[in-house]
Image 1 (spheres, rainbow, N blue to C red):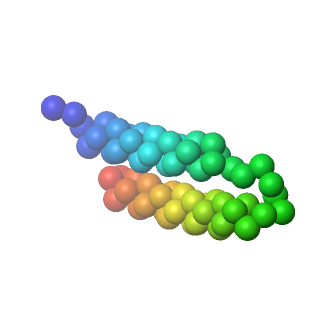
Image 2: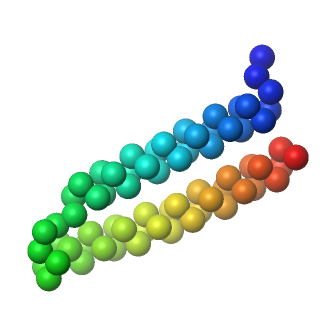
Length: 68
């Protein structure tokens, strides 16, 4: 049986892996033409990813403080 801390660590690792995968996919779709509309939409996606990552960090912080 795993301890609560081990379980929390595994959950955090899984959440980071998911975010990393999404970031890599987003980076792979970066348009070459920085002056085009597609690039503007890509930047919006990047900004949204930053917001979601910040939310993830808040969730991790919450989980860690709840387990203490």
